Amino acid sequence: MKITLTLAMSLAFTTITPAFGGNGDDEKIVVTTLEEMRAHPEAFKSVKVKFPIQFCSIGKIANPFFTRFVPSDYANFYGWSDDQKIWDRKQYDNVFGMLFLSKESERLTDLYEFDLYERLWVTGTVRNVFQGEPWIEVSNFSPMGNQLNTATLSHMFRGEAYMSRREWQRAISELSLAPSSALPPQVLSSIHKNLGICYLRLGESDLAVQHLDQASEFMKKRDHSLAQLQIVARNEPEAGLDRAVDRSSIPDHERPMWEAFAELGQAPTPGR
Image (cartoon, rainbow, N blue to C red; front, side):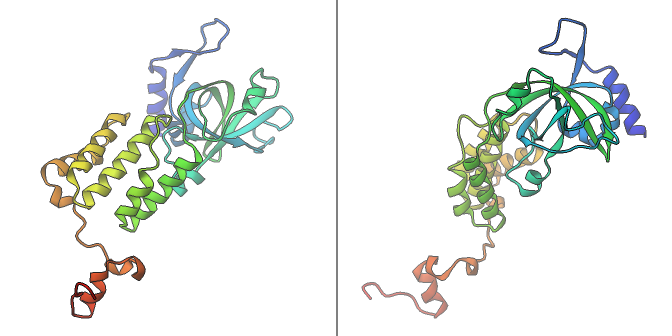
């Protein structure tokens, strides 16, 4: 309750921005994020908001007993927050679906033409709060440019999977295929941060510094873990070295030949 009241008061004093696509009146909106609205939905009830999302799909959510959003009058669609790391399975599954556009809206045709992962600025009003989620009536949207694609998402997912198994070279191979000038800055930041970690674990401190610095350039807000990695890579790279990689996790056919002889207590003889 205390948090809700505090947020409600802060909204009243938030710097407000004229709503784009309006009709010339004094209507105002609060610029926020989907995470903030989902965390404190009651504080945004009846507030007009503007927030960025990544488009997912058209939906079929309806709850006529609690809201005005019946399928005959509204088109429902799903999206992720612009900052969600949707290459992580848990984040991908945490999609938001309480977005509703009137079927009388002149933007209805545009809604059905958006691509998967397309980034949008959405303007709307939080009309209801039900089961802990804000239900938002959308009045307008505008493309942001630069978006994820399925190929990049796959490389990032596999790259992080290899990182979790401490297969650093394989992770680098996947992550190196991911960067593109068409990606959002926060995605590029994550890619370079992961590449920096991989090179740091392999003892390639110069490459680690290079990628971590690039990650910092793309970062929208300060990342304390990234800053710490930069310090380690520059001043104490040996502290970031992975000294405990389990060689037995590598399939036999991929292991260096001398390991097989070492296990037998002998070294390979040249020419044999």
